[in-house]
Length: 254
Ligand code: ATP
Ligand code: MG
Image 1 (cartoon, rainbow, N blue to C red):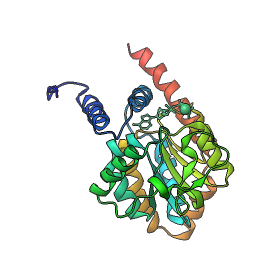
Image 2 (cartoon, protein in one colour):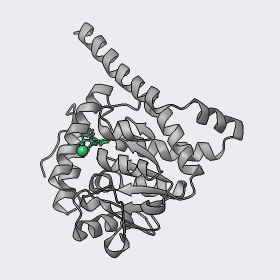
Image 3 (tube, protein in one colour):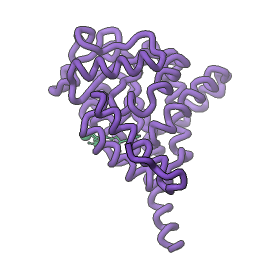
Image 4 (cartoon, rainbow, N blue to C red):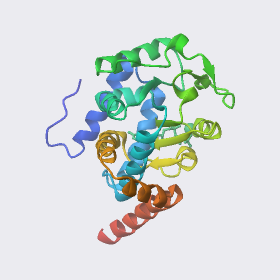
């Protein structure tokens, strides 16, 4: 593969792209996943490629929901497996939560490839592969309706990333709390989720794991304060206002 100069100003971003292209060659990522990453990168540019306060707030509340959940499940697709395999497994162990493969473009070969990536990253059990995806989300018509009975189907809290708006809405309608990691605060997923983390999964997943560890040490009063003060619309507003203010400032700095 092409060598990226050490001092290239966009080196990290280029390396992430190379990782996704390699994952596509290994049947983990589909071409559409590369396009999704491109859309995400655009919004990452707008927030300055850092975990901002609005994301930190959402991460903290998300950690709390995951720790308090009866059956929390982390939904994994190709891009997640390609970009943060170890981190997502570590997060699942810290909560603890189940891992389930769920794909927009479902195919058993890819499901197995993703499950293999997760197991190599330390996962003991991976749901949603082949026959395990035996239940149906009635509201959905795509192949993503197929879910695991002990996983997403019966989950009370589901963490999704690079998700589609329809499915986020369907999960919410089933009474589940949905935590979405999505760089685009304007996407339907961001609007429909219970908690929206406007951040890159590369930064958000490790941050979420740290927050899970913190939340477990919190006193009940602290937890109540977080629960009472969280409002997802406010968080999304903050993200949008942040981008707008930042662009204003950048235009003045030219
Ligand atoms: P929706 O269906 O919710 O309206 P969409 O159709 O615009 O979303 P999709 O292509 O379905 O978008 O999903 C990709 C989403 O994931 C995009 O909103 C994109 O911003 C986001 N995304 C892509 N890469 C990352 C990443 N590395 N970290 C976080 N979010 C990302
Ligand atoms: Mg979509």
